[in-house]
Length: 367
Image 1 (tube, rainbow, N blue to C red):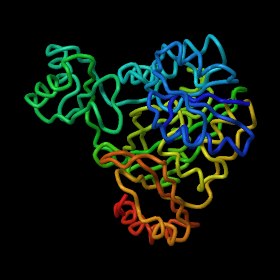
Image 2 (image 1 turned 120 degrees about the vertical axis):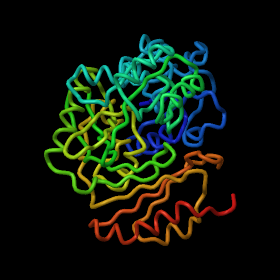
Image 3 (image 1 turned 90 degrees about the vertical axis):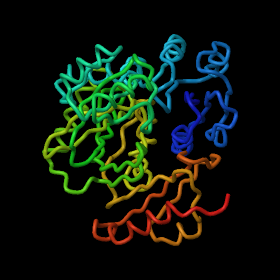
Image 4 (image 1 turned 180 degrees about the horizontal axis):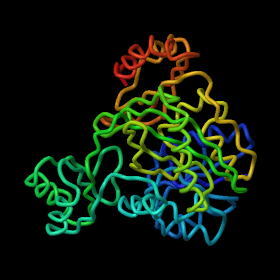
């Protein structure tokens, strides 16, 4: 069976690596001839809105999925008229618009921070009255890894940021003094069966995920069940198939929805070594109508992203229980080029080596 993947980044690469043991083959569509997934599968170079490229990509495929949420919905709908595509186009349409995303989750009874759409100065003034300060002013579309948003503490900062972000197509969102950020990965199969991974604690720096701890330490059973209930509502409403990631702000025993990603997700990379079945394999199982695999953790894991640095491979592999994943991408400042996962049987054992792991992820060798 041949699976098409829209996007040729590291997530597509890891999907293919998980699928080859299952006897699957892969083709990627990406505008860049340097897309790193092309190192592990067939790469069609072309724009997502080029019908000729889409037709070449689709020829001979059995089904299609995507590896990032900013694939144009028009491209997904074009392909949906020719072959099965998962997750469904409506999931992309919701996730690509921060306002629509928040309103969708609120409609399901999932709590969110206060928010207000902004299409100009008058909307901003009304939003500041309703949301208050400090607040986050965000673009509704296109932002990721902290891009397209800014924290504003005063009305003057808000007005300046409004201009800097283009003056319209924005969302003002109340700032949440959260305890920590957590994420839940869920998987829904074609037959409607659903499995959940344990909540993961995520730590960001400069808007980019730096570290995930899995399962998140100190999570009560009630909090896990609450996150699963919220995810199940979204899966059902979207008639979803595949992996869906939901990110939350944790405030005490409450969860406020932050963002969703209709795809495999960075906060699930730990599952490759740290769970009975990785998120990548389970995504493929879901698309193919195969039984979903166990999401049980294998001990305790820490995943650290490699941001703009290539570590000393020998030093990483000298750390017992560490696994290096290098994406085959050119190293540039601020770019995710790989990750390291460290697994231990207990939190105590993991904590002893966590500072060493973080140091390895920050020490670059010449490239």
